Length: 113
Length: 424
Image 1 (tube, helix red, strand yellow):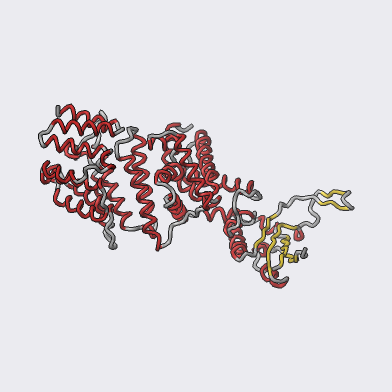
Image 2 (cartoon, rainbow over the protein chains, first blue to last red):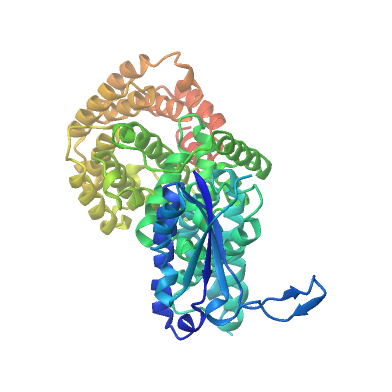
């Protein structure tokens, strides 16, 4: 089985004006989806990220006081999962609750050691 | 600012009722290898309550407040220990505690009302594991599931806090080593495992009911907690066994008479002398209800028979109305299932009522040289009474004095001293 990184981008604006009840429901979807992955031994780990960040550019000499990409491109979180192939991993990612907030999910295989 | 005493009473009551359940849920989260962590969280929640309520008053729903605080403290610990090896997150359900996407929702799921009762009972079954000595079982139950302090447990057992700490340590080590999972046993094991749980509950009850302990509060607490534990078994379908109803009935009948057993001066009152108007009619009524519900299934346990005997006593308006023949029948049935010298001894008291001291002595003769009874004060007190009724004051005194040496309880000692004095 191979490992894949799911890079979840965007969704910040869409989630901001949610009521607590809607938010709770959304988090339950995460719970169900990730719960299924954990149950099948496919979940390695994953975390949401804070919106703030810094970026080093120009060979590390220059510091920007923000993440490199913002808005729809802002990386909001990541998941590390196990799957049989890139297509398989992509299929799994289709159920990511992030899509409820119009996120994008990039699926990348971890290069084998 | 709220009255400090009122806060203390509310908290104390809440703590006795709820701390065991909170500990059980937290043990499920942290694992049986981290029992102390679970106990600390509950203790912390209690301290927070005390501090916060002092200034802001008791919240509308103090129970929910306490649970929420414990839950938030558990979240803090998970965040801190996410990468340490202390907590085993390998179980899929627990793995979700390690991600920010799922931590809160997973944590909330652990605290679902319907699951809490199962976790609590699961913990009781874990405590009453056959490899753990009964003494250690009850010590652990009182401390972890009933919210007793080490000092209070020590008082209940009339022993030192040091002894209690050692017992607790041993039990926790056992849990850690064997990774005992708290759960309600499956159908094939439920009867024998429940037997162990009931036995621990009944022992706890007797610790409070019998007079070895002079501390009124501790005694009432033990009785109350034993009944609470038994009732919680009746709240879950899988553990509603006939013998659980029977023990509940038995404890109701005993508890109904608790206030008439001792005089205000602290001396024991025999059943024949008790003021029956002091008996708690409502408790006797509940006992009857439980006993009726205990009669399904095909098992007749010692709890059924002991409850039936206790019921006979409760329903006799005066001592002379007692149906000794019926009681003797129950004792005979009891001897059939448990050939126990103490049951045999108690039966001899029924013989004494029914057939007089000569016959009673004949029966007691069969118990001669029984090592257990030789050191049991009731055996000698019974012989003392029998010889007294046979007009043999010398032998009567010998046995009463022997009985006096064998009991630690102030009540019982006083009772026996009075006997010796009155019969001089």
